[in-house]
Amino acid sequence: MESTSRAPLLSVTDLCVSYGKVEALHHVSLQVLPGQIVTVIGPNGAGKTTLLAAIMGVLPFARGEITFGGETAGGHIEIEQMVARGMTLVPEKRELFGEMSVEDNLLLGAFMRRRLGFRDERQTLEKVYGIFPRLKERRRQMAGTLSGGERQMLAVGRALMAQPKLLMLDEPSLGLAPLIVREIFRVVTDLAAMGVAILLVEQNARAALQIADYGYVLETGEIALEGPSDQLEDDPKVIESYLGLGRK
View 1 (spheres, helix red, strand yellow):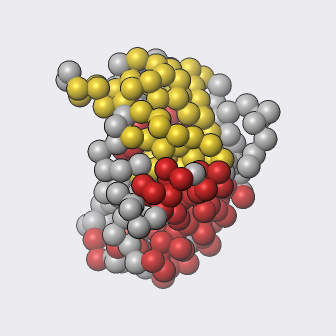
View 2 (tube, helix red, strand yellow):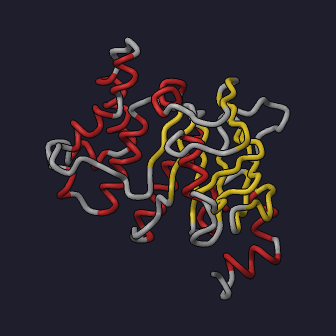
């Protein structure tokens, strides 16, 4: 667990998000320290994807504050501003360009850095290929022809092309074979060791808590539990609901 004396990279305070008259998130607060892996677990429909979308600026939020890298925003956030400041999101559906090559998909991830004047996308590309050698093997292949595991690698690799300070992952294990899930989570652990903060939304609570430093349990739009991941793994409610035979 990272020392809590360090200033948070991301701080979310009393976040409320509504769809019309229905409030999907109620006063959610969390924080992520630099280089820390934080996971948000919970059942389907708890608001996990909504939380990431609001932090990224995909959805406006009704009330609350989001502070990232020392800058605070309320209400609506511009996605481009968050990417420029070092935040990236790998959505659940991955949203790749299937008719473009693997390499072209990756290079698109560096668009904002290039727009800001950086010309280091080729060096970053080689680093991504070092993390995911299979993507280098498939670099000329159309993204739409990749396997599910390869598409997830490509989605993560494209996000890394922006050289993020915070990488947010929405259900990265969804629909993948256990062997590929272990590989993706190994990469997540390696990235954190390199100093990238990770905010991981997962239904696979056991796998998420095993690699995370800190965890939050989100239920019906509210934080029901939080704590160091090893403490959550031992919590009777978490065991009954998410880790044991009675997992929802």
